[in-house]
Each structure stands twice: as C-alpha cells, then as structure tokens.
Image 1 (cartoon, helix red, strand yellow):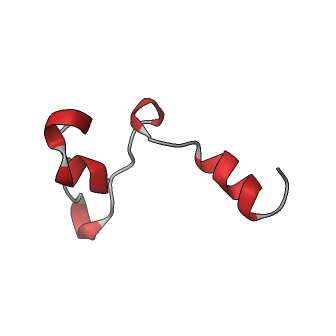
Image 2 (cartoon, rainbow, N blue to C red):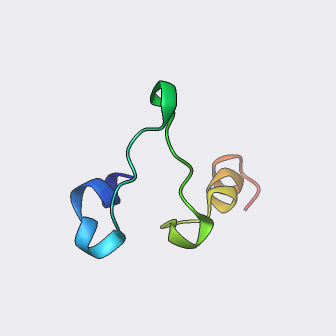
Image 3 (cartoon, rainbow, N blue to C red):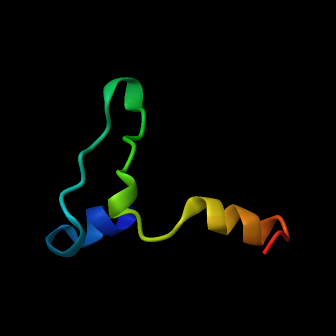
Length: 46
C-alpha cells in the first residue's frame, strides 16, 4: 500500500479508504511479497 502511495506511476494508483476507513484489499497479483510465506518465516516454518 505504501508503494502505491509513494510511487503510483510504478505500482498503480492508491485506491484510498473504503467506508469506515477500512483498508482496501490489494489484489494478489499486485502484492510485492507472499504474505503466507512471510508468516511461515516468522513462525519458524521455513
């Protein structure tokens, strides 16, 4: 999300907040890293 806010030309436009200031879900194809893989590493399952 930060990459979209700081570098919109490179990573696409930041969609902003939805109702009640809920963060929007970034499509998996636009994510910079695999969230599940990061969780595995943090939990020592890598």
